[in-house]
Length: 89
Image 1 (cartoon, rainbow, N blue to C red):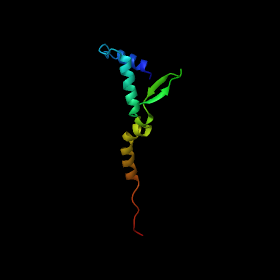
Image 2: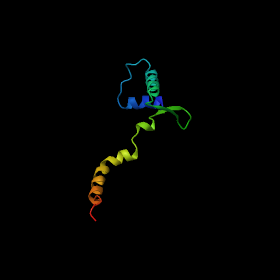
Image 3: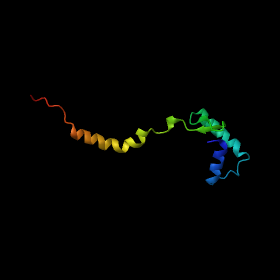
Image 4: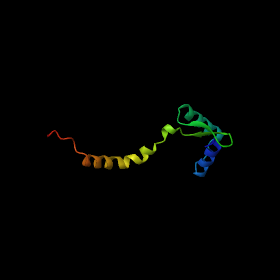
């Protein structure tokens, strides 16, 4: 998202920017700090303008999103169907 898009989205969600003399500067400074902390990545939008995005490391993988709810039942089923090798001959 570009800083302008972020400002528009905040306003649309009811965030009051009236207390800031220059809301655009506040948004830019916040984005720069988040970038320095590696919480955001600078990207180019299709028009070539600078925008910000969350780095992929902050996003859960597909396995993390869908794996947890099915992992335990699957592991339980596997334990039931596989018995340990017998030492009897």
